[in-house]
Image (cartoon, rainbow, N blue to C red; front, side):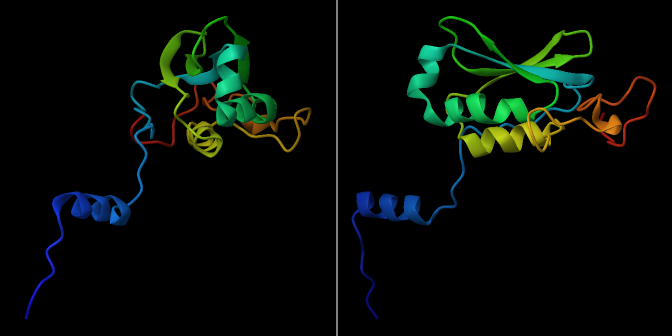
Length: 144
């Protein structure tokens, strides 16, 4: 029985093709750090968006659908999702440059933001505080 031995560069290439696809941009929320998350804003510059088609699509087409999520134009700023508490205190900044539109939408939904059916649609009463719980209401998450 003989085995075909491939040169190391070919083995590395095969390993890369067979390995499961993961992205280095995957953000995992630290729920202890995000206690009190109530709103967010995307800070970016229009010039930066022109070279980042996926982020631009999220900013221009998806942000209007989310409750408690806004866009803030800052000249020269790289796109970041800034997570804010009830008193507008900054909890965390997440760079968006390397993320796809789908990844950003999944992240915003995972963080608990409510997505409306239309930009001007009413937000149901139970989601007015989303992603935060109303003051005085206990969290249903064990890690909060």
